[in-house]
Length: 194
Image (tube, rainbow, N blue to C red; front, top):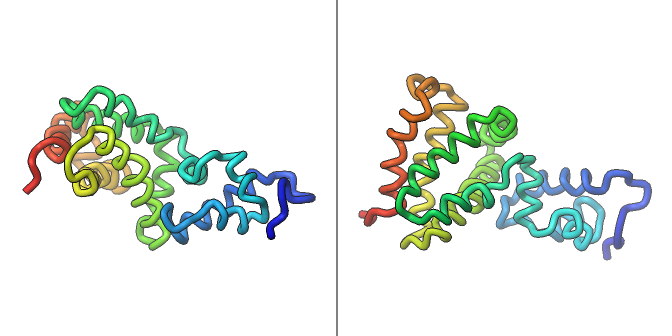
């Protein structure tokens, strides 16, 4: 049985939990990681993990060190409804990635995409924490399929514009990017799928 409460002699239990969470999420992804396994790796009671971080999803976001909670960020896109959601989503993507303080930690996650653990983190972060709540909130049919189709466009823009800095996308103006991608994103959200 694991000890209850704070570990003796460990001044930064929260940091130990975060370090264990990063390791566990990298190995097992969001679905394959339990709060219990994180607590065991950190040497604390699972209740302490919940005390510091709340839910497993909250712990996952804290482990990624994001300045923006993607669940909160997509809320206005969902609340405004399906019409125009593609444009709002592309604008949100640009808002997040054009902010240097937000972009830098996200780039670190993206650079790990070549590793199996990095792939799990990216997949879980994009599909479960961003696109899953979006398509679920919009109430579209075939939400899982639509989320993956959206990811092809949005992750593609991020990789080419911010990571690889491929021209002409890297230097394209914001409105040009919105005009180019919003219609495609809207089709993946709203049009009948083949």
